[in-house]
Image (cartoon, one colour):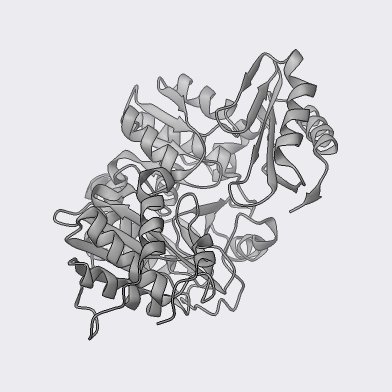
Length: 461
């Protein structure tokens, strides 16, 4: 195996590992990572799995060999989603989990998401930098022979866990026979949908459901507006009650109403918060600082306690554990559940939405429509700029003097009586991300958005 070049460690990001294969991420690096993980954390049993990318099997083999040489027993769960690795990692006797995936990144990329036992995240401030140092210092080569692995499936147990969010057998039997249009985007989400389908009364219509690492219909990333058209058209063509699309490792799901209209993740956070508070009165709900007013209003009206956290899965999970929050949501379509070891999950949200539609007799458009009118939002707008710090300072100087509240929990948040915005920099690129919302005044929201973009400058990206 070739030596790991120091430049290759650019693949170590704030929350996970991602890079181009093989120049930034290769078998040598992944082998040494597995070795370092087993030794540093004393992990004796580790679950590993991967997404559909063409490079994933070779990286899993190198990872398993490193874990094996480090003294860990490797439980290989095969092709799966990140949520399935999280589930495996909080099963009795499992000391951690590693998912080989690059999620929604371009086809030449791959990566790894790592957790410890109990599905506790490993990120920049909780062990990932130590692993990076171990890999960088290592000259280890694999011992002779392939890794000793144990092929295992937790899917049946996982499906039982998912069904528990819909109540007991009688409650599931009472669900209406909704039609749900699903688009896994040739990622792995269809595997879990297929495993759930026999237990539910829904008619599932499938688009791009076959796992295919060549991604013949494009990299699945419904967060990008240009990637939503196929799902929207499919919802309308099938007459579905709602639609669901996922990213490649399906830890995020994206929802479309019965008209094929994409529903911003911000409004799904409020919808799920209300649903969880019906089951857990008075509980705490975690939300991120980008768009907040709708969530705060819903949570307080439902008798819950809204708690703000910095954006990012490691921060949300840490805050959820500290607060023992029942649910946490980010507008980026990450949804976290206490009963799922405080982890994010791309299946529980659409199951809960299906139950809400069934129980209420209201379409998804009606469930979120009034909230969208009360708190219109711009959605996240990205701008590439030369100097993030300088732009943030200029925006704060312009708006802070007349504001009711200014916060720096995550970037810059500025609130006035009838509108607010959050502007934050990317962790990995020279990009500023803007979100604007108002209290029932869509023209004002659009006016302020235009005004801010003119001040920010830069180029779309």
